[in-house]
Amino acid sequence: MAFKKNQPRTKASIAKQQATAAENRRAKQQAFLAVFAHVGTVTEACRLQGILRQTHYNWMADDPDYPTMFKEAKEMFADSLRYEATRRGRDGVRSYKFYQGKPILDPVTQEPYYENVWSDQLLLAQLKANVPEEYSEKHMVTHEGSGDLMNMPIGPGEPEEAFHALMQQLERMHVNEVKITKVTTLSIAERAAAIKARRSQNGSAEHE
Image (cartoon, rainbow, N blue to C red; front, side, top):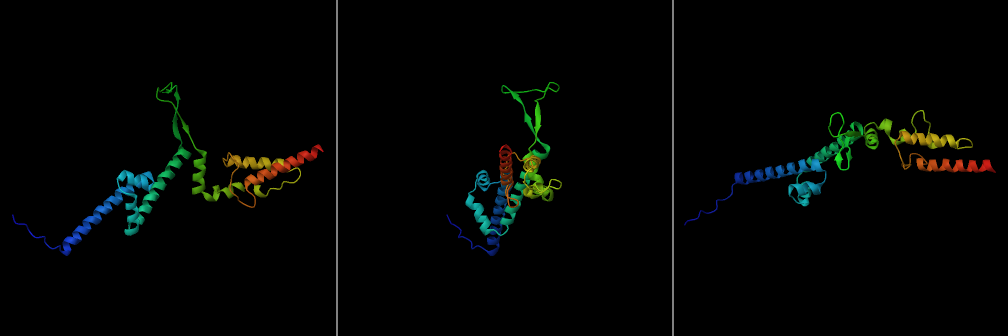
């Protein structure tokens, strides 16, 4: 049986092969990025797509267009997180009620009973991100009409009012624990401690 000799590769055939390889790589990249935009981690996206993590990093290093594509996928994932935070903070989510492992039914509709649950922390986070001029921590601490709580005097006769004003401001900020980063010279936590200490000293002086 006669065998044909290998034909020399022409420039056209090489170009076609390279173009096909580039198209296949781009298709793999797009499939990977679509999954990444949903799951948000390289490891999980690689696992679901059946590729090595190193493949992603090779693309980042070798393909000049891929970093921009990856950045866009990351922004898509970030948008999905913003949407979820807004949904839970503004719109609320359904919390179905159960009794002894069985869903409670609405007496009127006979449908599973649920209550809407909201997250004040997520809502506040969205307000800080989208309306920082009104909801940044510094603005909220020195809110118009409340006075500068960080520099409020704590002289004789004033600690009680200063302490209550500070606590009311913290309640408006939906803060359950006094753990806020420093805004001026003293943090709110330090300010509250100073007010408490002065209240204690004033109380001791009154009983002497």
